[in-house]
Length: 116
Image (cartoon, rainbow, N blue to C red; front, side):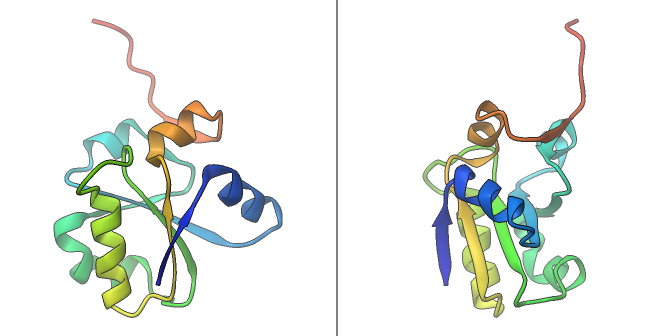
């Protein structure tokens, strides 16, 4: 089952020492390389079945999936459905995605790229 979760609720869970695995799901790694939620893993949408057992061996772990932003056909939601079909039982979909997380002043790893 996939549950929707807000950035405030994720942050509160983390503050209570809950172990959360963040997974960014997308089409390519470039956006992830530029910035991602701290300690996230990246899994390409088209390789979830192949990579999930390697990157996410504990199917009972609390996993928060996200993409750049929430939108129709969001790769994170599609990926969460795929993970659900693989037997992952504690899945959360981050409402608003990475952009909303960032603008809420929550921690991200980011690469500064000076303007050209």
